[in-house]
Length: 446
Image (cartoon, rainbow, N blue to C red; front, side):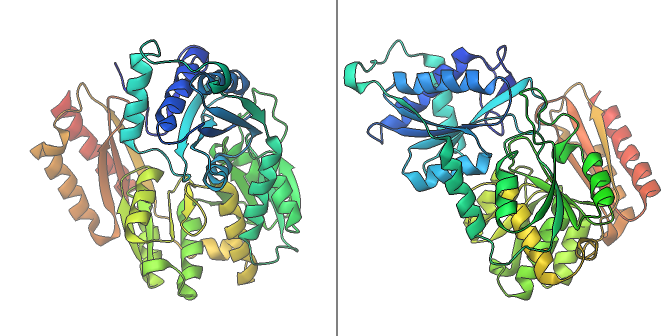
């Protein structure tokens, strides 16, 4: 049987792959597991705006109650809001029902531990084992031992208050266009930014259960770019479906990606001697221009595997205060236990206001080098890392690029693909080198 938990919880098409029955069993397994350490374990449960969210929420909560746990239903709320409320409420765990930036037909279930961090692999493995074993072999509580459900959608205000408390700079005078992706941030983003004095134009904040991420949000930036220009705004901000990531657009309509946002924030922290260890944590996918910009600012970069959980692990292990991904998952060690799109937006806005400059100028602190990605479909991924011809091809390409570029080869975690990424100053050269490496991979693995 394939592993139930992927890199970010349990995902699948709602009602066929991620069924109410599975949600029930996951809720039961979680309540049984956390009930061994917590009497009457309480779970904070939030969701995004997908039509399937309420169905899965009901099944998950019923499963929790059947094992003696208690479910607090927060309603529609950003993923980091669930993590924060879990960590501040004494709850045993938190659960988010969302498939992030995926289309509306998909959904997912992701758990946070009582401290607001994602569950370790070992705990997910134990939950998976409980789901597979089934409930028949374990006792069921009865009478007063059966759990209960309460609805507390107003708790999102606590999260909004917390977000506002992290901003020490007045934001009045800034004009922004925000794209809420018809997702979990559709109400909270407007509430927080309005409270802080922003002048707003709001896009895609009318969810109907089916339009989450539909040609909008952080994976479809074109509408936001056009709106920033039409409204002559200072900045555009785009969130994804569960609002754990944020990307930006400058006043000229140009994209400001997660790498550039991290450079802007890290540069300001370095100037104030407030970036812990003078180090930014990011993944192997970050642009080489980020590395050069941080070096020029007097800092250094710690590189991790792809995935925000690996960024967080590096931050915790090394006492770092800032890390993230090119996709816009950014983690603030002082405040957050996971990527937070609204906090990213607020910290970027504060940096913009304090600088007194335009976002295009701040984004220009980093030169974004061209990247070329070639996906090579193979019969088998086995042994690609130790293949001498593939290694030689990569080394030859990197030697040609020198210090101004790199070649990154990695296997897809879900498909029979080897991905070749080349990065450097000249697009034509990158395309040629990436295809040369891809040809060797095709010859060796097919």
